[in-house]
Image: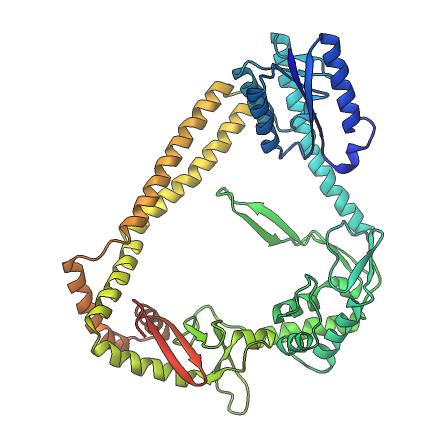
Amino acid sequence: MRALGVARVSTQEQATGDRFSIPHQRQRITEYCIQRGWDLVDVVEYVQSGGSNYRELQEILARVDHEQIRVVVVNELDRLARDMVSTLLFLEDLQKVGCRFAAVADDLDLTTPDGELKMMILSVFAHYFRKQLARKVKGGLAERARHGKHHGGRPPYGFQFNGDKLEPHPEQAPVVRQIYEWYVHEGLGAREIAKRLNVQGIPTQTGRSQWASTEILRLLRKPANVGDLQHGALEFYKERTGVTHKRHREDAVIIRDAHPAIVDRVTWETAQRIMQSRGQRSGRSADSPYLLSGLVFCGYCGKPMTVIKGGRNRQPRYSCRSYHMSGLCQPNTVPVAEVEQAVVDHWLQHMAQPTPSEIQAWAEWKIGQDRTYDETLRERHRLERRLDELRTMRQRAEDALLQGVFTIPQFQEAQTRLDQEKERIQGRLQQLAHEMQRPPSTEEAQRLMAELAAAPDAFRAAATVHERRELVKQYINRVEVQAGTVTIQYRGGSS
């Protein structure tokens, strides 16, 4: 009987240990096959967590089918997978192709009812062990943090590892001190600090040569700079849609004076107060008071322009965000009032005498928007919600299999049914995408031409900046500013 061995370890350290080492598993598998007179073709070896080895299991199945393997042998059952669903489905797939399974240390043979019962019991324990291991790892990391030990990964900028603790980096630590000096004692802003570092050619932590104001602010906030170790400040969670998010935890572990500091505590706390006060003064509401917010771009670099205040007249001005944040590009600055006046005057005049091609282009865009936000959007949202429900139903089916409510055939039948419905929904979503791009009918074009002609009066009658901005966005795609010249790109491609 042709046999294929499988030897797995979770980490490189286990690969050379005693009980779990690859050589130890290979020896046990070889002796087991010799005792039973099986022809051991090969022993597959890999280093991978048992909770995420789906790809490796599929490779084993492919070899079983291609090389006519009749039995797969492992040293222990949890060397195959620690997830019970993965174990059951893998063994079920083996049985479909006429392949047996054996575990040396567990004395497991699936050709008998007793062997099947024993396999299910051992799989439950393997699943339980995986959950317990995850809890122990998290607890161990928190305990290391309480003793001031860093748990690996890349050290913060300004530090390097000395064993499992941090110490100031001989080249980066002086840069961090200089940043605090500029920010706290000289009163420079984050953008000006980033510009100075870029001019001096000082690389960032990732090796890039360009700093940004956001990186400066993140660095100033790090507790590590004052010698504190923070652990568990962020936690990651998944929605039922499968999207991973992160959020701040209130019970984060903070160890004071866990390692040598780069700056003193008074300087660090002063920097935090400065950031807080500057953030309060420059905070913006969700509803921007500017007519062209989100539409103005720099004509030199193409990056968005941001509104800044200050100077002699304290009037708001549009400035290139790339220059404002990183000191890059050029000081491309123009008063907000001038840009808004130029755009409104040109737009109202342009709307009074549009060309036929401009009307047609705008009508096609407008109809696409109307369809997107009417019945097409509602149907698309309904189908997307159904896809989320199918993912949840799939998870529930796996839970039912674990609890013994579903047999393996019942689970696979449900799985097939859910996959078929998923394919139908995805096909319909593709059809909707094509429908939204069809050209407008004559009636639709006439209706939209009347709306186009009435737009200037609607703009003048709008009571709030928000209403005017939403109306402008229906006709203007972007506004570019370069050397005081304002260029308007309308919907449909005209300028």
